[in-house]
Structure formats: structure tokens, C-alpha cells
Length: 282
Image 1 (tube, one colour):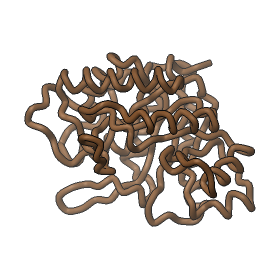
Image 2 (cartoon, helix red, strand yellow; image 1 turned 180 degrees about the horizontal axis):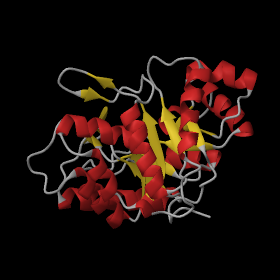
Image 3 (spheres, one colour; image 1 turned 45 degrees about the horizontal axis):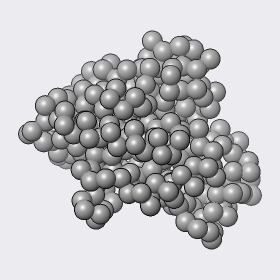
Image 4 (cartoon, one colour; image 1 turned 60 degrees about the vertical axis):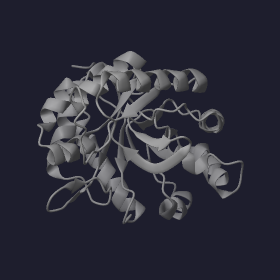
């Protein structure tokens, strides 16, 4: 039974990111992986090796698309050519939903290739939600937006990050990709209680979880995706699962990538939290 309106795939289980260093292992060993998350932009091409690899993966595994450049929070219009290419990929992969970040990163057609935080204002929420709805209607697939890690705040903000997230997803009527590591990282950088953030997120909108490792520096915490998940993040994940029920979970490991077996083993640690999850949201 679906956990909520946006999560019709409670049996999807635990996924890992599809990364180039693991291709040979995946194709030679065919590991038992519940699903792979792909970065959409890496496969939005007309042909060649990326699509050949993707088609081999699709023969054996379910794939969920994750984007890094929709930039719903940018003031300009959505890139129509980007949307057309993305829709072609959506049809190819049959992804059950599509995720991207709640951020901005482009101005007048120029891209920063970074996930920049949005000022938490009602006007920004209105613009962001409108663009999410526009993308969803064009792509014809459910969309969930991810909370990003942040390292600076805007004085003009009119609400907290979690209030802004709620404002956007209610206006857009979309799902949430809840990155519990990003909540933890931002809480360290800005001095808020991560449990307060989590308790403010509507469980009925959570479509997917991200978990990951990060790096702690003297003055800030950085979302590096190059370490195992630490105990406080696992604790936050356990609370998220208790609130939202059995929900598809993805381990991110994108730098200093170890052998596939190590990444997969780290991802499978999430399993011990899922059996205790209720079939319905709290």
C-alpha cells in the first residue's frame, strides 16, 4: 500500500547511484541492486557510450532520474531545449518520478553548475512553484524537489528553510526528495535543530530519501558525498522513516568512490530501519 500520495513505490527499497568506476563490476557481476539513480544530464545525449550503457542497465534494473540543472529557483524561464531532451530520457527510462534540487544556478541563460540556496521569500516560493508545475506538466511525470545543503543565508528571507520547502511544495503540489544528510549539514552550518526541520516536513509529500557522508571542517560542514554515513545522520534517517513509512532510499557516494561492494554495503545498512516503518505515514 502506498505510504502517501507521492510515494507509490514503497517496495522499491534501497538504491545506489550509477557511477562510471562501477560499470565493469555491474556488467560482469550483475549485483542484486534494488534500483539505480542516474544523473539525468549525463545521459541527455543523442547517442554514444552513455546511452549504450544506460540501455544495458535498463535491461536488468529499475532506474530513477535525478537532475542537477533544472534550477527551479532561478528567476528566468525554464530551458525548453533542456526540457525536450529530458522528456526524451524520461520516456526511455520510464522513471517512476523525477527529482531535482530546490535551488537556483542560472542567470540569463548562463549556468553556474552549482546548487545555490534561494532567499526564503513568498515571492521566490511563488516563482519556484510555478516552474515546478510547468516542468511537471511538460514532462508528464511526478516531480519531487530536494532540499540542498547550504553555507550562507539571505537577510531578506521571510521564513525558515523548512517553512519555505513546505510553501513551495504546497503551491506546486509536488513531492519532496528529503535529503537527511543535507538537513544535518545545514543544521551544523546555521545552528538549527535538525529534528525541528524534520518534524516540519509533511510526511504525505515525501517521495524519496537521500543519505550520504560529509566532511567536517573547522568552521563549516561540507556535503562532500565521499564518506560513509555517520551515526547522527542515521539517527535522523531512522526518525524520517518512522514518520514517513517505507520509502525509497538512495545512498550518494560521488567522490573518492570506493569499490562497488563497499558502496552497496553502506547503502544496505538502511535496511535495518525500514522493517519497523509503518505502511502508512505518521
